[in-house]
Image (cartoon, rainbow, N blue to C red; front, side):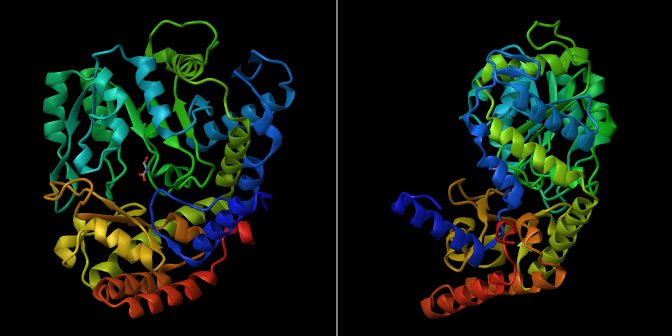
Length: 426
Ligand code: DSN
């Protein structure tokens, strides 16, 4: 409880919203009580610039231990030589990697933003796009979602990117890491995967790990499928050196180059309460039960995709290989993605509008509605419950002119959701 009454009432309203609604945004999740406890701990009071054993301020006997545990657990989870756990989130993690390896004007090859790539993969409005030259790959066939690897190779041979980046925030299919690796190796690019969305599915060993295909760097957030605190993570292979000394710019030195770029290159003091919470979450992800969780995310996602198609939704790529589903709303019902987002939010179903490949509508009013199953799966929903979700979605859209029906749906969803407590309520 917060003693400031006004703020506490907002906190209570948000708790009620989370309890009584169903979270469909594929990049959100509910953390455990222990992760919340770590985030709210007194490690928030501590300044710890530097790295374990090499800090600028005193009083680090406990921070050194928690950061070392977080690093070791991350390395064990993903099978890397090195982990930097100080990155504040996914965007700074990606920027730190670009700055560690590239010079201004160098080329990065990444997924087309309108085909599912992320803002930090070179959206014109970002600082990275002003510093680096981004070239693109995209999907060959919007019906299957298959990436055009032939075109990727042609563009890579011509543009000679220094980084080939595999990753997305709006793509419901799997990437072929072996093909990425073959093309990247042919043109001498460093292979980087931004696995922010699927980190928990990789950690849970239900999706392939890019490191098994020769990737040198993986960036991630820690708060999506990985179910940790909001934060970033950078994993790399190579020799781990002293981050206080500038190493030669070689692939072997990537771990040290990255550490130096996170601090002092780009960030100041790490948020040690957040590093503690990452260590807790990585420990949870190392438990055998996390594999079951990751598998259930995929089962629920496939079931929800099937149920949605049964009741009339047109899915982009007609299905999903991961935790995410993208609906082409105008091809499903006479409504766009933004209107769908607002309408479903009204009844307690929270998803987000998103551009779809070759979207005829503008980015702020796109055709797509993006949803996924990580958060619902954390609450304990199973395949049979996906029928309810799909039915409520179609009922809401068809009843959008009728406020009294919408009120009734909202109540039904609240009753249904209340059967599945938040982890922090258990
Ligand atoms: N905002 C995240 C997402 O929802 O995919 C990506 O940063």
